[in-house]
Image 1 (cartoon, rainbow, N blue to C red):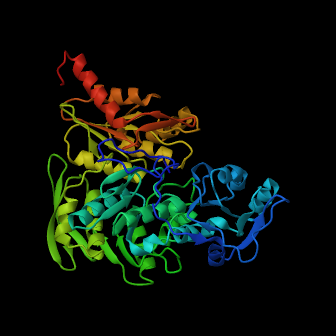
Image 2 (cartoon, rainbow, N blue to C red; image 1 turned 30 degrees about the vertical axis):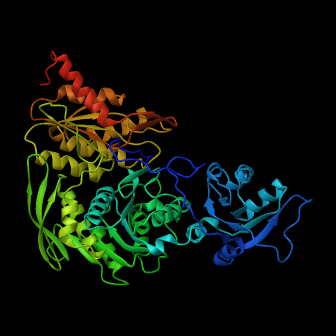
Image 3 (cartoon, rainbow, N blue to C red; image 1 turned 90 degrees about the vertical axis):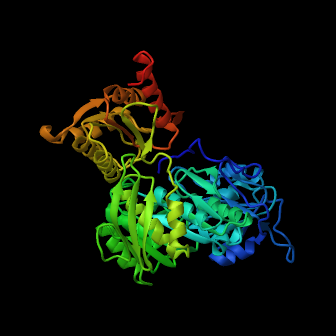
Length: 552
């Protein structure tokens, strides 16, 4: 997943405990969990490792206990269990010396990791939990070490390709409007009752996730809504989490650099709903607007009938009608549910956001929230980097959106087309070290829907930016000339944005797509400061200054 940052307008930060890296949180009063109890829980054997001069504790001695768990040596705190997992490039056991120096009192690893630890020969006898696949049990270990906090929270998980972030924000707002004390875990940020904590992944690794749940529980929260990525489900990051409700938005091409095709991608998502899954949610809410949603509803029904949501068919439990869009992009519609109909106001434009809002409303009702209170909360939400307007007094519409998948880009282009009679320019690129198959698709979607396509760099990461741009350009030029937008290319993203602004006339639309809320651009492993919203605003201001101080 792309690294993410935090929007600047949030309402404050929650500090982590001493010694943690930014964004990490630990409970103030964690339980003490004996290593022997953890070994019994996961079926591991305890092997004592030490220098020949050291010995294992005598029989009857107090067992070693842990108060935290961490898989990053640089984030270890005194009393932690260090999870030394095998990786693609290195084994975590190679960093055990650093973990021990920082205060780790035990290690979870595999036989290869044990061999590395034996070579290390620590001066003090070290208990090592040896398991053939330590990653597969890390979630259960993390949940246990922090006292299984998710069992005492109502955890709502949202999965799908597009709409997870927006739906999570809508649900959080509905929970707050109903008087719940809510937390949010997602792509843009983690929030504890509206106060933000930066997120590095859509879904944190299991140790950070369960520590976060414990912090939320300590602070009196009762409900958590979280985005659940396919990576998190496939890699076990949410293992040990008791999901009260699972919600599904939709599925389209993404992450095929990680998954072996769409069916494998779907299978990872289905772990939140499948009967044989250890993280299956107890109740399911599924949008059935696409064929993947219908398939997911069938999977979820193996345990209990899911609540279904649809904006395109009348056969679902929750449907929408009478959608009315205003010139500013806000919308109103009627939501029809099991207990009747109610009006819903939505600040966000686009048919897909009606689907997101309807899914949020159905999920909130499933969570026990009064639909009218839920609707009041939903009507107050703006989502950073999602169809976010940049207004500097100009006479054209300027929008930044996170759309970095073909289906999401096509949807936002259609939305902007529907609310403007003017021309449309799209600034677009594609991320490096990610699914290469979607790059020409991004170009094709843009060239079919826009009047001007400006291809530029997104986050090239370790790849050659020119090669990425070429793939996007090939997709754009593959559109027949009669149906194709004008295509331009600029390597520098700021120059691409400026060119779109200079092109725009009264009533036109400029869409800067792909990075949304992000405030950095990653090139050759270095993240440089870059915020599309700030760069777009500066470009608009520059055009105004060039016209003798008058914004046209």
